[in-house]
Amino acid sequence: MTESSTIRAADALARRLAAAGCRYAFGMPGGEVLTLVDALEAAGISFVLAKHENAAAFMAEGAYHQTGAPAILVATVGPGALNGVNAVANAHQDRVPMIVLCGAVDPDEVQTYTHQVLDQQAVFRPITKASFSLVPGAAHVIADKAVAIATEGRPGPVHIDVPISVADAQVSAVTPPSRKDAARTAPAAADLVTARDWLAAARRPVMIVGVDAMNEGAGDDVTTFAEKFQIPVITTYKAKGLLPEDHPLALGGAGLSPLADKHLLPLVESADLIVCVGYDPIEMRTGWRDAWSPERQRVIDITAAPNHHYMHQSGLNIIADCAATLTAISDGVPARETWSDGLPAKAKTALEAAFPTDDEWGPAAVIDVCRQTLPRDTVATVDSGAHRILLSQMWPCYAPRGLVQSTALCTMGCALPLAMGTKLASPDRPVISFSGDAGFLMIAGELSTAAELGLCPIFVVFVDASLALIELKQRQRQMRNNGVDFGAHDFAAIGQAFGGAGVTVRSRSDLKAALEDALVADRFTVIAAQIDKGSYDGRI
Image: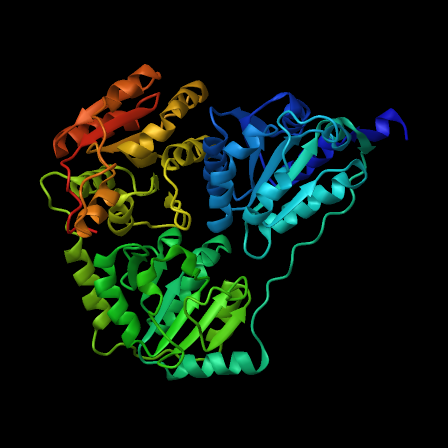
């Protein structure tokens, strides 16, 4: 094999990722991944230096939500790989296609060298769809497998250990044909007949739409199906915006709010047909565990993978493409009047009243001012905490991925890097992140990365010097106040120290002025919104 007919194994991997549309990789290099970084850059994939691998993975996810190409995390051997574990587990539970590239000590070295050596595949296997160790003779095949496994079916992360010598090993420059994407499928035969019969007979149908439908791009089909049969639509938080939330049939998101569930669950329980479209109960709190039963109602479950969770069951399980299935079920079934008692419209009105926007100040006022001031196409990201529950109910989304969050693992510290990855991939779109003060402190060092990249998202911090959601649960259980309060910090000054703008606000007018300035700024802005402790009581 001549020199001109060979490339490095790392190049084979990088070129396949570039062919999948990847243009960014995020991480922190060590000596073990230098060849990987070089190969990625040579393939047209920009390597973004983060300050921590956990943040890097969330930046990668933010970019994925804008580009549709798999996210890429690069981590060096040992501590670098382990630093990314939380965000990789999040990608697994939140159904995010991610390629996790880790440096590794050569297999023969492992036998006599123990420094930073551990079984990284054993670490990543439980939190990924697959784990590989790159070998030269199969470099092209492993690269193709990784992309296919990460993106097909229910998406998720795939881990690849890249030993030092393997990255540099010469392999054929001829790229074998990639695996063809799996064809989209729809139900047929008896199951299709049953689904159509149930739809034709339904007078009180409800749709519950989730992350699979979002990942499959089924928004237009969900809208067409809902409009034809006049079916109200509830989405999980991750699927907000698949049906624009100013649509009369949109009942908004559900997931973690007992207050919202008071109005949504009775509607679900009174339905005679429930059509679950890409719905994944991993996003829902336990209050939804017994929300329906095939013994009480007809339930059609359309998912990308079999239902083995047993949170609730369905009378008809369809493992198929969401859009193709909705089209097949709809074909030949005439439209008819539904919900003659007007219960969905009443529930929509009750939900609006349950989350009022007229507070003089507080977290609801912050959310309302931001939504009213920022453009309709603004992308918002949100950290875990009490503010996320409130925001997920109050922030209307008009398109998919308008509100990005960790819905399944519910990990803190994700909002800021998600916003950075979003802004990097879509520089012309307004981007805002919402963090609690504790979550912001976890990740504040990445403000330096935002400055280095010249990014200008808006970072809003709810400042109450408390783990508000945990403190609320503590009080609800009549426990003493322990381990939930911390010191007050000047978050505006932190933003300024890292090269951005920083503003502290305590009123609607101050917040509106800060947002208007941030929209035209050439650097990021940290807005510290000071709120009282206990502001979420009775609101989520």
